[in-house]
Image (cartoon, rainbow, N blue to C red):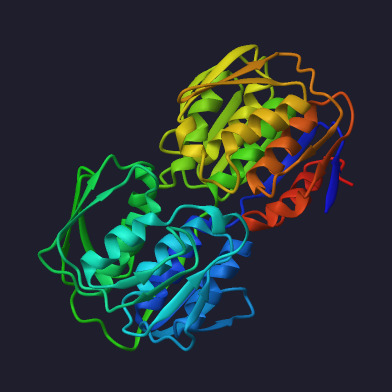
Length: 424
């Protein structure tokens, strides 16, 4: 799919999309319950759809109500298939593999696209310690596992991704872990673990975070098999970051449905918006951003690496050189995002330098974004970053493989159009 974005002034109000981070965790928690879960404001992204497919294969049944709420019924992990596919979701594979390992049935867990090349050595190292047999494709997908997983004291490396820890926390909780702990070295993306624990607590699991170094468990009380759980999926700060940046560089945008008290890591976009000098108003579930004379900023994205793409689009329109820390977190995304951002934004006339763990973006208060053709590299956030930068281009910007956005934000181009952007 090819999309053309024309230079535009943005103005209007958009309600944020559902957070796939929140939605996928809610699906996993609902699967583990012996009862019914009502999910309010369910997500519709490809990653959300993949999560729903996985929990169905693991025994849950789903129905949609007329108001759009998702109803999930489950008796716990009871696989109806020996194969699971997590699509292209990094969180999906890293969260659902430990949950699938709660079963004593042999299961093959697979994915698609870039997920097939992303490292999964973690499972080869950890699963045998938990009594789970595993066969992998030299540390990559597909993996074949057979449980049941037995919670014991372990130590893990959290430097690659917090998503592995999310899966273990949920699996330990569901397995009735009591008096055992998970020790973690060098944990990254800590706010995402806050979100995981928040969801677990909502569904009745007791896990205690000791300074992100040790996580201890207390067996949950017996749940009513007929219990009804309700969970409302949060608005998505990750996707909204692109709309907020659009407002900062090209007009005025109001995004509703965002909780400033959220544990989502990407709410840190607010700090960058404050530091760059844009017009910013933060209200109750309402963020308004307007254009002003923008200046370069320094930002540490180690715990929120998904913010790199919108931050690059913002930095391109700021006077001076912006410095973003955390480049090492970008290698194993849908693309190697550090290199991809450097190469695709070079086509737009934006100079990006990579120095060890730093990204340096040379921007201009009066941007000179070129009219050209870029490629998403099959990466949803690259497509959105290029689309936002195109708002300040000298002419139309064509995005190849533009439908990559469906992974996280299917309505992104529609929302841009509602804000007055010419999208063809």
